[in-house]
Length: 219
Length: 228
Image 1: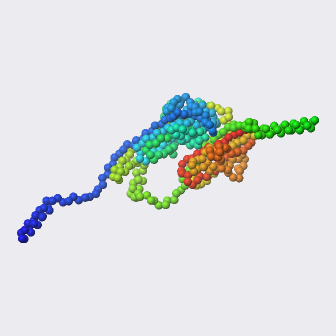
Image 2: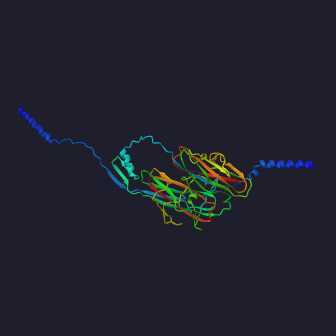
Image 3: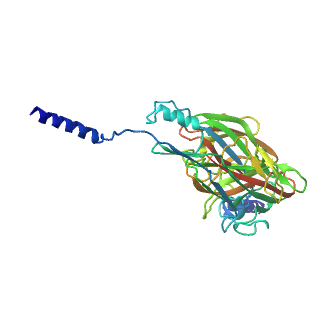
């Protein structure tokens, strides 16, 4: 009998050594990190739909818009107010459409500034852009803004301006960014703008121009 | 006979005066001669907010991490997988704005010395700007009338008549008067004054920014119209 019990214990011990122990369950963390290249794209379309052009500031029925020769067709050219009178105010409908696409999960800022003053090519004088060129929020179509719709002035940039001339767009290199003209918490967006011009009463006769530079930066 | 003739002439004169004063055709001899706008920009700083405790569930470590990573574009998935944007990219494009400016014989008939006035104010406060700009009437016409108002509200919840003016030739009026808002007040302007010859008005502005106005830039146009 005692021999039988001994065999039983011996067998049990052998089995215990042969059967694998049950797997112990533990927890740990794994961090996977990858670097992504920031995607920031912007398309700027002047004269973005039919009906673009300049209208003298009046209340009531609005005259038909007109434009200068450098705004030849929808989606191209410059924002050319054409002939304007010193001391008068104008609105330019459907001036600029800015489309922004990024992969920023936290959105982006859109900056818009003048690269210089409003420059008279005839006598090399300038008028301050912040008192001459304004922007007004518009829409893809059905714009009802007038020359008296409240707008906000463009500022002349304080940052470094590279290149530029009448026929060549300049670039602006920012150290610190100014107040944005628009912000978005989305990764993409569309912005539509009319421009207003308040021609100073003392403006000298001539052909004026300024470049408005838009910059988009992820937040 | 002489007395009868005199009576007849007086009767005729009175009749003519009556016709002149009531006829819309003759009244239309008073015409709008010029109209200008002065842009008023109000840069609003939000009212200070007292911190009342946070109900946010974020832990201290997470808040420290968020503060430390700055503006990096980081996406966290299940707290284990991260995408980090390694470079701050930007895109830039430009559009040219141009015009051909011609002289305007009426440019100085009615003009302001400032096309734009910028006022900084905190929401919930009132700011006064003495002689923010001058409006000049430069004509030899007698009996001209000058009317004024603002074109629009600054925004929903920020009415245009929160902007008041004290407009005067020599000495300020006892109190400022809110501007009428053309878009809301029946499309009419308020009378500023009647006068003759060359005159310059000093315009004191007072802006009262409602407490609930969010921070940002708001604008309207103070419009002046000259008639005679």
